Image (tube, helix red, strand yellow):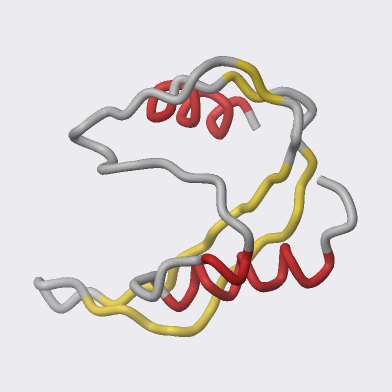
Length: 95
């Protein structure tokens, strides 16, 4: 969790607290790097509503940040990220 809180603060300016493990995603699809190496991703997802600070954009990392409802997600979204968000919103009564 320390890595997650540090990365979020570095990339967004927000300080997170009371993170709870939401899920771990791994497996398909199989990706292939330019050099031919094949790999799967593993994503460890946490959730919280306990945060402070003001959003700041690091132009190297991001173009914009937005809080959105599930039905307002952008069309251009990685399928894996859409799945994670679907799972979150589908089972979310509180963070």
